[in-house]
Amino acid sequence: MSSKPQIDINDLLLVKATPEQAIIANQTSYIEWGHPELTLEQYLEREKILENLEFTRDNFQVWILISKKEQQQESTPTILSACETFKRKALIKDITTITTDKLEKLREVDDEEGGGNVKEIICYAIASVFTPPNFRNKGYASSMLKLLSDILVKELKAEFSFLFSNIGPHFYQRLGWNVDDHKEIRFNVDNNNTHISDSADNVNNVDNMNNNIIVEETKKITNQNDLEHIIQQDCQFIYQEFSQLDFPAFLVLPTKPTFEWHFERSKIYAKFRNIKITTFEQKLTILRFRSNDQKITKLLIEHAKREALRYNLKQVVFWNPDMKLFPNDDGELVERKDSLPSLACHYKEPSFSYFSHFKWLLLEKYTWC
Image (cartoon, rainbow, N blue to C red; front, top):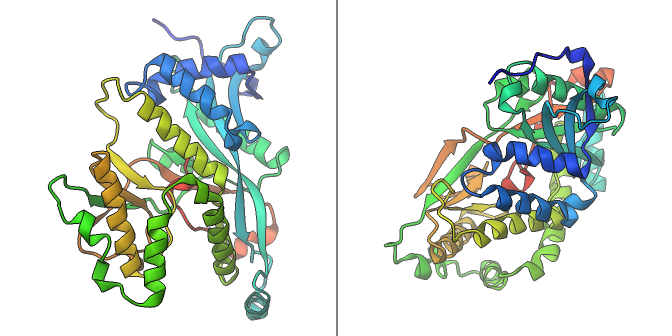
């Protein structure tokens, strides 16, 4: 089957998909994002459920690349490429307008006031970039991302955007999205490992008062009812820690709707587990991790292993861990080959050249979508 003639990229237009066009885009991308774990019907059901969650309801958009000429016709335009965006809350530590002689004064302000030049912003996550096979190698995906970048800057006033690449770093890097850390630490869960249930309650003889409190709290946190309170506490710590930085930095804030989206997505796959799955990853991935020291880290790892063992999962995985907090006895640190985090800064200020880039912090699984 011959592909359609290549369309001049100057004739391209990126538009928000209608609900009907979004379904068509999902049907087309099923072979990439749904097969073989789900049937087409299950894949479309998954997308319908997810798009109606709080996280996506007002923050999600499907974009399609079409021909300007076809837009003027009454017939449904051909989708040449498509992608999605998610609006996310983020923090930036912006010192790009601060000269060297003012930097020490800025640090003093941060220490005294606990906030300084930390700013909460809206950024955009880009996901599900897909070009149908018969339209590939014509520059459509590149053109779509260039058009999207213009929309993000000029219309949506975005200062940052990010994505997770499954095709390596080079394609997105040349378009302005630079790859950041993509390590993970893996802990194997052995079905024959009988020490997990005992060691989780008595790690390294954790016996001082503060650590005992943490142990008890760890046992209590077993359902989503505690989620909002936990996230609020976490964000308070994040703000405090972020305000002390003396370099330009960026992070995506954890929010309850984000976690609920991840949970619901997992529930959908669990619902369909009666079908034969051959490539579905058998691992428990930690969305967000906070620890005081190696003892508490080990305790939490053992609790995670116990939970994984209940569901016959083979590994416990953390993205981009702070290795100072992780005991190095049984974990394997590796670089991921997929889901490579890539960040674009859309700042237009002349003084931005003073600093080479913003450091992306808390690059954990909760940021992925």
